[in-house]
Length: 269
Image 1 (cartoon, one colour):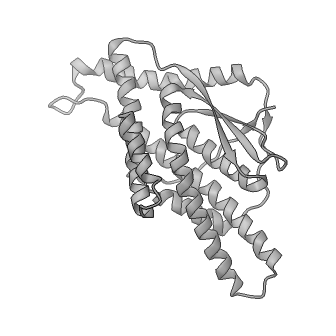
Image 2: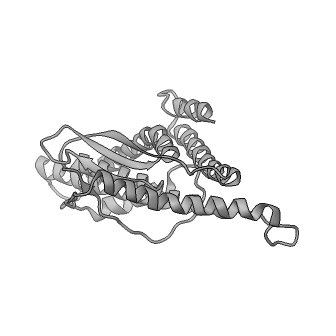
Image 3: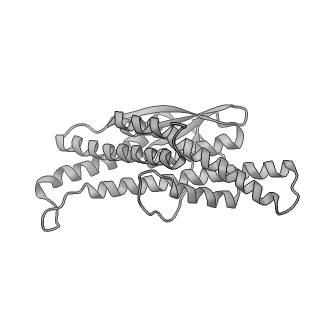
């Protein structure tokens, strides 16, 4: 399965494929990884084994200032959808790179390690394309200075990226929830199959317990954190476009999600 996912992502990152083909390959990879994590939890529960181990991954996020912060926020939201807790080191304008520190189950971290580069590639391509179009549109409305246009481009880009990550995270949460519901076996009369209900409930309890185990480990590693300072620049147009593109991004998550939400991302000392 891992080799299949890697093969799909290699094709997704091939410069010779179209954007639609790249998104389709990433879509299938995301679906395989998500289904695999649920299946593994069910198998461990059925065999009476210990739950998935908790690990840590440091992920480098490029970009200075607001651009880097926007990317961190988007990727942290996506990681949270996989049940991971996040902190970030070096989240200031003086640093060229930031380190997004993720604590989660080994299977979740494995999935993110493979998927985040491809998801980031789609997000960046969409943000650049849409922000350029936005600047071209407003340039025709009145005579903006070059400085004003560049400021608007940055505001739009950052808002787009943050909203894109939020939308993708929502879809991942809903898809994982649907997979868990689909994994519950039913008998011929529509009720639970008695021979299988114990393992199904066991898998659900394991997945639920993972959340608490991840939180406990995160608190041990980062007992004291500063709160993430929210980005002050905001573009309503960029946020709307980013959220819409995130909802439409090809991730293999064919589900409708409504509503929104946000979380506070702490920063490591």
